[in-house]
Amino acid sequence: MAVIIEVLNKQHKVIERHRFGQARIALGRAFNNDLVLYDKHVSPHHAELVLSEEGRWQLVDLASLNGSFVEPAVPVAQATELQSGQLCWLGEQALRIYDEHHPVPPALPYNSLEQRLQQFGHPALIVLLALFLLAQELFSVWLNVPEHGQSRWSRNLLNLPLLMLGLALWPALLAIWAKINQHEARFLPQLGLTFAVVVVAECWQALMTVLNFSLDGATAVVWLRDIGQTALVILLLTANFYLALQISALKKIAVATSLGLLLSLQGVAVSLLFENQNNLQPRFDNSLMPLTFYLNKPVSSAEFTKDSAELFRQTDEVRQEPAEQ
Image (tube, rainbow, N blue to C red; front, side, top):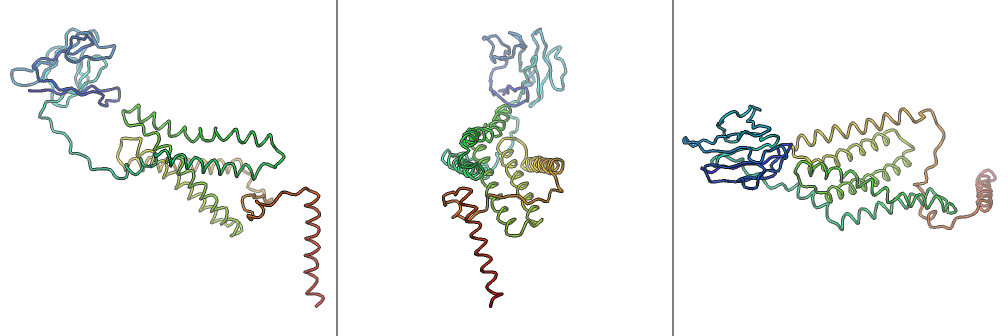
């Protein structure tokens, strides 16, 4: 009767799977074993798997230095009969033993959502999203830095690569975590998802700015902005975890929702602690200006003062006309 041996890592994930048909299988680090193991705590000739006359597989320790154990961590002092699917250890190397008639779980259905998420890893889409983010940041720098502030321009332009590197750090960490757990890294899909959600967040912020201006800073707009940002964070984390973690979809959503709410509450706490809520001074917002302002050539302070005086004079004339009539 054939036997199947799974070689497991420290997290008990399968890294190798072997099938043997003979009645005696030598296990150890020496190259003349039937199954050559790499763990440094395994002896050159550590143990054997032997098929008994009753057709049962037994584990026999060959006086190894660090011993052999069967689940649940019972030392093997003599030939020990194994159950199909039972875990055993040679030193610190974990193995799982199956007979050839052991049932296997049914095939999983094709996951269309996972395939759609992986489409975000297309290089052209990632480049397009990155260019949008760079353009948005350049526009923001242009609004905030005066024309004569060349040194500030240089500093802000140097920060752009750091921004892109920071956005790529989270997908890289997820890819490393997935690789450690013997899962596909999927770095490009994670990167594309992160860029896409950041782009949507920027568009959402622009929409909320317009609504806030149109509704004179209504409290509902502030709540709507925060709810939208929290929903985007939860959506990003759910998609990230869906690709990186090997747990059920419900657990992925629960973990992503919990972490997203925690991050949002942390942001609210920081704003309450460090922002002066009693400061009622008006704040200048340079993000809402007519297109003609962006396209017109800037004027000097003296010209601006002269034009302002002329504008006030014309306003006074228009105001006095109804009184004269």
